[in-house]
Image 1 (spheres, rainbow, N blue to C red):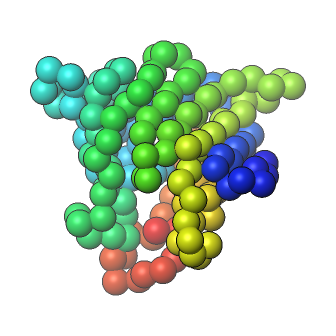
Image 2: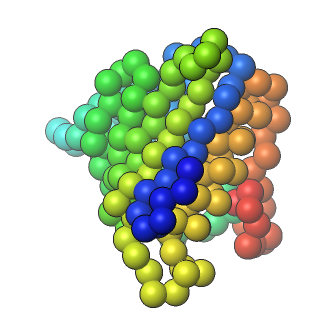
Length: 166
């Protein structure tokens, strides 16, 4: 979906599984590391590091590290909202907000991702609308691949760079 101001985008994908399975893939360290991240660590507001299978909660902070990149490329931000059922919101690169919803639409499960509050950039090649849009398109495709058949499309070789799947 196109926003002429380049401050928000929506990415949607149908997945042949239940909304609860889609949400589980987003709501725990184990789930996120299956299709998205090399490392996903969540810490509660009282400083407790959550276990791999423990559901994330409102106010948690996270540390995310990707395959194909060194430990110096990471996101460390905050979970804004998780209803524990089908919707999750978190801070992301450039102080953007990402909201993910898993729902039934016309008899099929749809995972919808909205990234908003995208800051403007002087150089369009460095614009988060483009960079994050490309990244989320790949990772949502990988989520579908994992949940429907188990094939992981991520590049895990840090010596290969500038790839759409890393």
